[in-house]
Image (cartoon, chains in turn yellow, purple):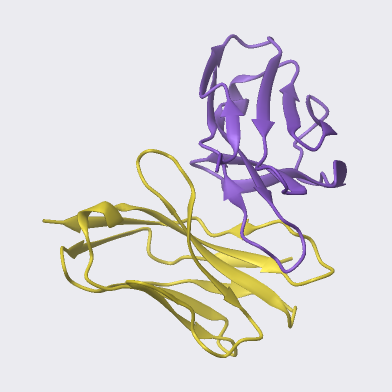
Amino acid sequence: AQTVTQSQPEMSVQEAETVTLSCTYDTSESNYYLFWYKQPPSRQMILVIRQEAYKQQNATENRFSVNFQKAAKSFSLKISDSQLGDTAMYFCAFMKGQGGSEKLVFGKGTKLTVNP
Amino acid sequence: DAGVIQSPRHEVTEMGQEVTLRCKPISGHNSLFWYRQTMMRGLELLIYFNNNVPIDDSGMPEDRFSAKMPNASFSTLKIQPSEPRDSAVYFCASSLSGGRQPQHFGDGTRLSIL
């Protein structure tokens, strides 16, 4: 079974600075997808970024980027120029590749606070 | 475009009562997922459907829980009888299967069983 571990229950960062959230996972699959979701206090689950395991290039979305290290089974999220609106829970999630279950396996989350 | 629509947003009921949560997926999406979020266990998949057919219900806790998807635009999650330990936030999500497209989540239903 796949597991996802987020080792930082809470983090804080000053506005405009950069912060990196850690995620590791365990799988025997060779083809899979990784995601970061954001959950602000409003409770919505919002997709931040998606990475396909067979792609070596790290995904980026504006101020959000990932450092995907397949051999190390590591998938960290970097947030640049942090904004107050980035305050939220961040969840790392794993999904098997084509032919496998479509379910997302989530980590326990990291609570990020951006301070003014 | 309308996102995933869940109702009710909040539900408070007494132990032993039947609870029905509802979900309307994004039009055109053919996979639908029910997740439960608690402090202790985090986010867990309960069940998911593909083309209205249940594919994986291994996360359904026990026989008190049941889910249906009678058509492509509607799904229900029912708990009967409800217990205090069922208190949680229940999310519905939908996606277009194939290519591992991202799942889009509804706003969730916060369920409190007294």
